[in-house]
Image 1 (cartoon, rainbow, N blue to C red):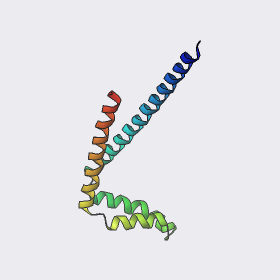
Image 2: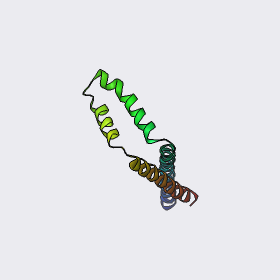
Image 3: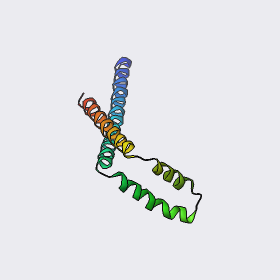
Image 4: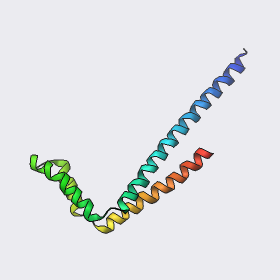
Length: 111
């Protein structure tokens, strides 16, 4: 086999490998878009009161065991300032960002 033909095959193999990596990375981006969309839908259909109740329930035990638990204190701090307006914004942001990213991923995968 001539050297130029071997180099051409090697270049095609590299190109194929790069394309495979591209497809995998775009598919992972699509998975992330799906998670964002589902998160946005979950936020849209869950009340702010329910979210705050979950936060209080989950942090209560941690703060009982360790009143200085860094993560629990920061989550409670977030909950104190979590308003219905922020709730709607997060739901809208996640939903719109996930849907737009999903459409782009589908377009890239369809070439």
